[in-house]
Length: 286
Image (cartoon, rainbow, N blue to C red):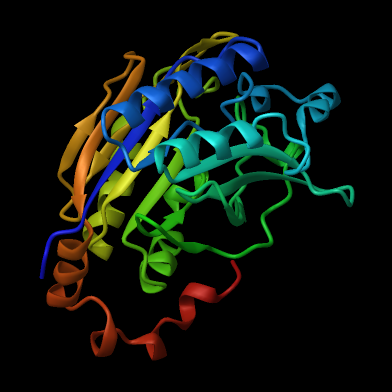
């Protein structure tokens, strides 16, 4: 089987500035990644603004937009089309019916919108009051057939739930993307979750024989430090691109989509090896 190489890039930067400044910074980094040969580029979660969920205030709802009225969506589609890039665009969605969501709009390499995924698992706690703003998503997990392979997207807290990664792998995903915003725990200043954050996604990569690209913001916003550490790992869980905690820019790795498909088939984690008749406990309510 011939190789089918996809270059997956993660964007990492500080995002404490204005909406315009943040948008300009991310667009510049996406353009840089494209010039370096990227085919798929993922930026941090909710990159248009500082991470407003660290506080609980109704004024932040003014940041929400419908997909069609988001001021950046046209720019992202143009960038995607101009550079033959797949871009998962993370934004605060006004659902138009009184509900609000943490959403990704998937843009294919020809600039077409392929649909949206709404974050399924919504955290709440000091510094991460997302339930104050977002409804749990109602789209179900999504895998999109793009020019650069079949791609699934989870959003930040989704990455801690193995069911999310498994569902997308079973749906045929060649690559999983996780736009993220994570850092210090204000109520536990002694707790650094960086390593476990990486390990849980590396575990998904190994368990599902699938490469993963996760993008996180860096910098300090209102005293909360975000630890960056954006990375790409291969389908064996080896980190093949790494931004570190504080660097701003992008990191990129080559993924052989055909090799991923062959490895998953040979490893035997799908098909008749599975026992769905025994998995009922996974869908029981707590």
